Length: 629
Image 1 (cartoon, one colour):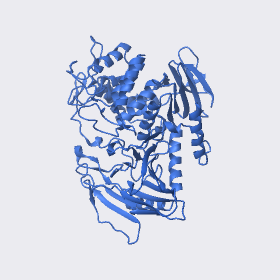
Image 2 (cartoon, rainbow, N blue to C red):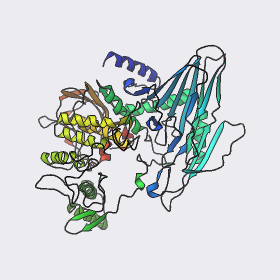
Image 3 (spheres, rainbow, N blue to C red):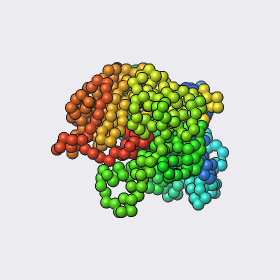
């Protein structure tokens, strides 16, 4: 660890030491995005969120989990007017402004330096008190006398998605309220969703009196689909000090990062980009289940969008017609190889569970499983024997352009078993047909990952670099399309793109694969880095750190189990048992990680289904709080 990083680490540990008995060390500079030039387009401003509510800082909009407006394909997240976007107005002062997102603590700070005072405005979506958006304005004097600060709030126009009720404001109270319903339910029989919002009145002027060196004002926004829930959260927050709100929030984020994170040395841009991708995903996911407002997922509205009518025909082969695979340039096609293989895996799962665990099943249930297995066995999976590749769908021509990776996904994340030459053909053939400005990072992620499987390091690095075209501005906002796309970047805050970058690191350069009886690992150095690490890899109750260097890697067991042991082996070595807090160093080769019963010395068999994208992502560090292996 270099001196600068060590110094920064010491500072960070001192900040957190009083709230943690086991402070862990991360380089803050790899987790801070900052600029003096704040984006005028609020799409490129950073998001703060907690899985229940989120906003782009200083924008006029708040979004809440599960609150959608519009019927069927018109469904979209309903816009709630922002009440936390508080800003300072400069009047008659020479001032400068600086903006920073602290991803370690989940706090955005606007710093204003004036001739008479230093002003800090902090914005965060509380990590555990999920109904809350908090804004704290702090003034610290630089000269004597009365100091004033003019404030404004960016609420925007009334929402076109909500029908507002008449507010009931208590005279003399600083509390304001907004009660509304969505205008149009998503489905015919659906209900219009209620929204209850309470917030602190924002005065036009704050005054720092002559006898005070500084002052802090706290402004709370609380939002829920339940009136009592929102009001209770607001009242609890108003009874807390600014320090308590900050510390409890920052401590919760500290625990998230402590559960798992990535470290990259020698390439700060890659480090910041990976951390930004992970931050934007984590800030969209709650830490615990919410019985009042269950988490509805990351993707905005897509669950209500029909993608065509599929049919299943039982004849000599099982076929699926009228579908669309990942390639959005081709829809209403027959026998998409990606779709059919996904269906095959799903149909095989019941028999796998039955045969592995032998649960009690009725005769009817046994018959249903047998039917599923029969259909899976006869599912048509297109393959060209002559050219040794998988056609994307029936009638696909090799001179057609595709938007994004499709067939290449058979190898990962679906893990279809195939010869090396077929795996390479599925990449090379479709890579030539891919629209260079069409896809998000997911395509280049899968291409890079496949190149690494084929040990084509330079081509893998080229594809890795392609993903950075979709990262925008000082706050590293991921977009669906690169800026060079003639029709624009389309969707922003595009979590799919962030996930693509992370998958390349975890499943590409760390080489992690989730198999039936073990975990594969094939570490490689990230492009233009000196070393990097996957901290907090969770597997069947064990936690390991993986540190990757130029020609070797180091594996350290940081959490174990009393009833099982974990060991590491390759084809030429016996299984080496890992000991708690002890490291083993290995050359950059493929290894397998097994979980064994020490009483019998053999690998244990647990439930292992053929991995999907979601299951592979369940290995991804702090997300184990949501997806448990």
